[in-house]
Amino acid sequence: MSIIFTKIELKNLVSKKKQEGNTVGFVPTMGALHEGHASLISLALEKHPYVVVSIFVNPTQFNNAQDLEKYPRALEKDAQFLSNFKDRVIIYAPSPQEVYGTNISSTSYNFGNLENVMEGEHRPGHFDGVGTVLNLLFRQVLPDEAFFGEKDFQQLQIVRKLVQLEKLSLKITGCPIHRQENGLAMSSRNARLTEKQLAIAPFIYKSLQIAKKHFETKSALQLKKIVTTAFANEEGLELEYFEIANIKNLSPLSRKRKNQKYRAFIAAYAGEIRLIDNIALN
Ligand code: PAF
Image 1: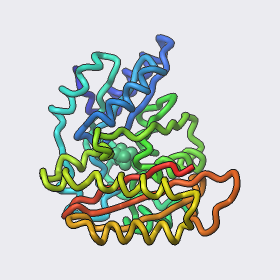
Image 2: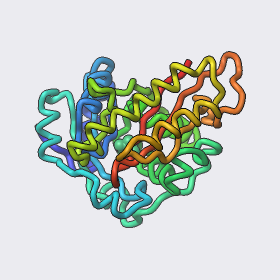
Image 3: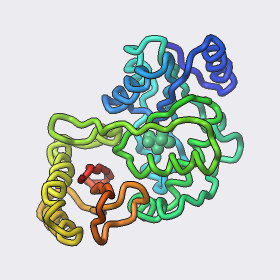
């Protein structure tokens, strides 16, 4: 399977496929591919004859230099992983200069409330970095539709907003969270967990399930207390936040409203490794 490193080469290939009457899907990734990515790619391939998978560890979305440095990188292994999909998957693995040119920095976006809560609050500048790279990648790949996992649910809503702000003409599709049998959400960061951490990390999903179970009968405050206390008693995991939010604007829940949909969100540390997950509550 060939890997494309330049935007010119990519543009030529994608426009050839489109001239031949094909639509093109896009799955942006930062590599260290796993079954969660494979499920996104499979969904994309159900709808499009060709799917571009970008593998690019985006420097502008890391607010922590160590996190960027330690982010797993495995291009050869990733290409091997994607070889199952044969030539319907086009790998785009550009350098930072190829994506950004000489100015590797973020545009400052106004994503409204979406950027002030949860990941936005705890990772300053993160969503400007995500918005910047996706705006560049969307313009380089020119896909008909892009696919994002709901594990990064806030990111998914940010991307929808980005498409509005930048007046881009592609469809954004959210895809269900892919989990291990024990409930742990698939993530590239899981590759950094020790055996011991891997054994305790499913507690994150268990806590989300507890919140879901009690959602109808308990208030947001009560649920927060239940989850916070459970984490305080769980050695090896440190809760950064537990939040219940309206899925549209991600405003934290104060009073449940009829006809509104809510999700519960968690960010927690297993040692140095930051994990996130979420669940639909109603
Ligand atoms: O979710 C990710 O892996 C990244 O945030 C993305 C969407 C590839 C942008 O760098």
